[in-house]
Length: 192
Image (cartoon, rainbow, N blue to C red):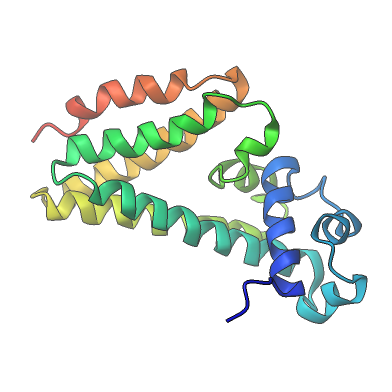
């Protein structure tokens, strides 16, 4: 199999990165084409419904990539406290050196979700599905660690909200400090 990316893959990769860095509304189709290096006509060939379709697919791509990272991080330790702390520490590494801004290309979807939730139902739903996928991974780790359904559900939702909120604060502060604070609270949150 060739390691060369197809025009479709190049466009999707460029769009995903630009949506993360600039947001949905500030990213233009011509900029996506320019960044991807793909022929101009290939955008509508591969994404006939335009920017919205491209954004939904970019959200799904990010969801899949970040879900794989979550699974890997949570599997690193059997102890749920250590597993979640390791996961949050892995996220915080993104914010050790926030400059250049391209270091943020794998930031979760909270910022895109806030930007589009009230103006585009398809993008809102794609973001909601993404948060559900990630939350379910947290839930499954907690269940496999002996937490009952209700507690695993509540803690997984809480951890999701804490991480997404902390990421917003990390970007605002240009610091990993908010995630470090959450990490210190994980043992208290996971006390059975």
